Length: 432
Image (tube, rainbow, N blue to C red; front, side):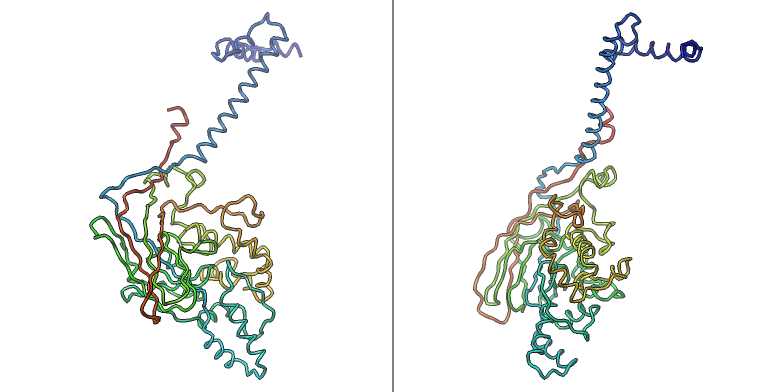
């Protein structure tokens, strides 16, 4: 062993280490190069140096983690006389979907029922089929072999009320989310959730003239802005005023609930845009900026457009598939029909009752909460570009019960906005 230490190459390495330690400016390294040092002191300085190196590595890893997790910030801007922004979106979701007369006619056409109880049970089955959703689970006591699960959604659409929801004779777009059938104006996601594409995998996109870009307003517009929406929806309506980059889903709270057509609703809206710097997407990864661009999307249900609520919809669907081994009819859209999970069957009555059992857990899937079961956790970041909408609601009497009226108002132009920006570059962390 001692002979090995006297070999020329080993001696060269030892001289290099001793020379490096004696000339190194790090505190304590010089003591390791001394030849007359006591072995206890040598071990002391060796432990100190290893501790400092270990702590330096920990601090460096924390710095990298800080860079990856907090590399973007939201700054506050005053956009006086400069802002050009989108109108907020207005969505109406009726709670009464099924047209009972259509349902009764359908039941008579497919089955000659002499027992009135059986007739009413089948109408009740159709009623539950129309209102079951990610938010509202129903327990089904009976099933009918002559109604196949793959036809559930198309049946609901065909037997639903044909409501008229218009603004200046322009109809709203009928859409479908896990909240149910809704009617929306000025929404960028309308293509993805249009009811026509929900059950028809071969349907083509509609070039809806009302949604041709831009549908914006700026400071040259006269204020206050008033938009009137007429409708003939029967029963309670959930009204949402929200960002045009989002759609209401299971856990979106309505801004107002209208119970009859004899009462008008006024919605006074204030908005603040959330933008992002041009270099945010190119200089930061998804986990660093903690927000997602609208395109491209990483979702199976909605492969062309991303939003946080659409991501949460897909998260709830994945949880249902893992627990109940089927796809609910109110989730099966054209993109799923083209995807790998299309081989999974659509939920029959047994599957829908399974959803009923897990309804409480499904309703909890609205955030990245640590209390969620492992099968329900998903990473749904907010949109990088978005809009904050604040609404003040009031009601007024109408002189007619033939239609309902919603007045959408913007009294003042928005003067403030927020911007997502890059806080640090890689050079900043390298010591620039």
